[in-house]
Image (cartoon, rainbow over all chains, first blue to last red; front, side, top):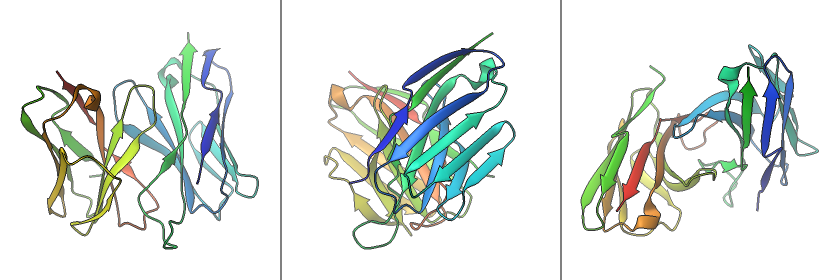
Amino acid sequence: KQEVTQIPAALSVPEGENLVLNCSFTDSAIYNLQWFRQDPGKGLTSLLLIQSSQREQTSGRLNASLDKSSGRSTLYIAASQPGDSATYLCAVIGPNAGGTSYGKLTFGQGTILTVHP
Amino acid sequence: DTEVTQTPKHLVMGMTNKKSLKCEQHMGHRAMYWYKQKAKKPPELMFVYSYEKLSINESVPSRFSPECPNSSLLNLHLHALQPEDSALYLCASSQDQNWLVAFFGQGTRLTVV
């Protein structure tokens, strides 16, 4: 059974710092890994998707890497801003018993990020 | 249009009420999903519809009844809920069930009193 762990559980930093959020998963047979952002009481916003054949993806100040063999991904946030404060969720999708992927993302518990001015 | 729209945003219902949550997308996606998220927990899958047919039911109690009337709409009918069913209900869609990218709605905050 796939398990996803995110470290740290919470992070509080001053504005301007560069950050690294960590995600690890137990089963390396994944199709993709997706990072989401969730504001309190809101839905999930997809930040970056890394397919299993890729090693990293970049969008603006965000960079996500994937080391499938070691079961790890990191989300790097450059020059953090108060508006980055949110919960960041890592999720993986892999084959089910039938050998095909289906829409069951396995989520980590999330990292609660607070960036203070 | 890359949005998944959920209505209502907030819902308070009694344990004897019947209500429905609605989800709509116009991206041509043929797979749609319901997730339940309790406070400070990650989302948990409830149902998957693929090409308007129920594909996966993650052992959800029958007081939750999904419906997919067409490829753009997904409903979740609620009846005789319990206070512990209070949660954020999230709808998502993807191109098909063998998805690579998931789009989520903003959720319906449900409170059962």
